[in-house]
Image 1: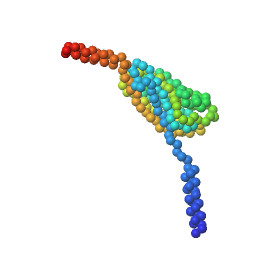
Image 2: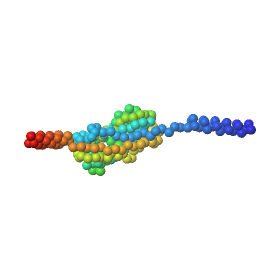
Image 3: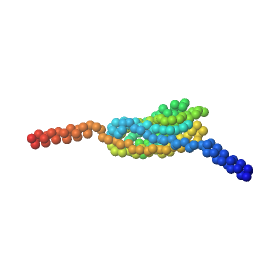
Length: 190
């Protein structure tokens, strides 16, 4: 009987110890974007920030961004402030193709034996011109996040849509024309 009780206590202690020491799965980091201004205005510049949220130990990243080239045209890609906050970096802006609507394989990495960066911030900034009106899906592909041991970091990607509207001047002219017609009609009716 004593051996049965000893065995039962040992199993119970092992289960409790295993539950206490089991690693807790971290929530995935999130890659998303924000634009300014919103909505985009035809004929005006548009800034798009590639964002990271809730990342632990980010040492390097890469991404490809797809967009509708009839609505948006990429001009330049610059490094965001998030990764350089951890030390020296090597940034490559990728390849812009405004015919297919892609910014391919933009990447950034810390240099040397440094710990990765934790938290949230801007990974990269993309300057667009807005030659058209309509909607442009913004989708990420080939997103890779690496920690300081060069292991993969789980990532969730939030794609979205950028809407481009005509310049405000045509709306103002249309409103003035409609107001003028209403006034004229009112004067003739009186």
